[in-house]
Image (cartoon, rainbow, N blue to C red; front, side, top):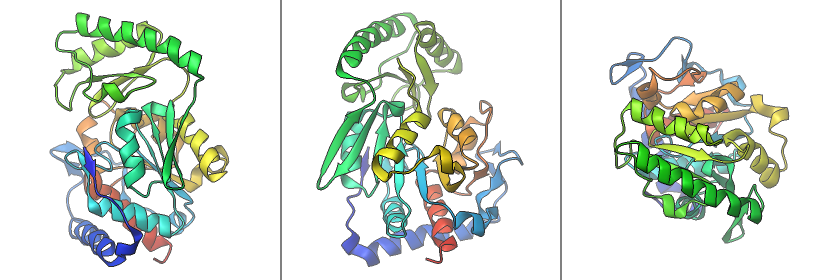
Length: 306
């Protein structure tokens, strides 16, 4: 997975990239409310119908990464431009992902994200001048104990679930394990369910993203991680102003965040999970993946008169 480096000095180039996504968003506004044959329910309103007055009050953006910021495994320049434009407008963007610390570090360094919360809330990567500082939720001794337990559960899953393999990014993980079900390997729903059952049976939390089944010990989640880093980096109380933050996601592991934030948005490819979603976001974009994020940024910037 890759991303484009960013430089606010390249304003015109970044703006052209952002504008290209905005134009594309306007061109598809008449498409049916479906994606690859999957119907988006009426309860998930078109993002284009969001009230600009309400959007003007947004103070920050929380977002997933895989298949939300990325397209075909990379963060496109249009998305980097969108995050930079949001930042310039006073809207910090914080990524909250199930991806590992090691995988997230180059993204934290190369993009204008305010921070990256990785491993479903277990670790954060925060800009510190020209460097990136890494902070963990759990103390060193707790992580050491959990690492041994995680290794045992991983061995059991690989041995007992046919076709189950550790995700290729596992070497960069510090607080969880991940089983690949849709990135380089493919598991059917029964296999995914078996992996989840084994994790939960071992006392772990487990969640399914668009590519991995993640499992970890502890009480941290995407929501607790977001709360932690919004306070740590921005000095804001996320719980006190949830109606002024917007969350963007694409799969079932985003459902708790959709439930937590009144202004939640799914990029169009969330419809791939239509048969498994129990909680839909309030809105769904017309465009998928990174292009959907650009569509969201365009509306936020327009609402602020940018």
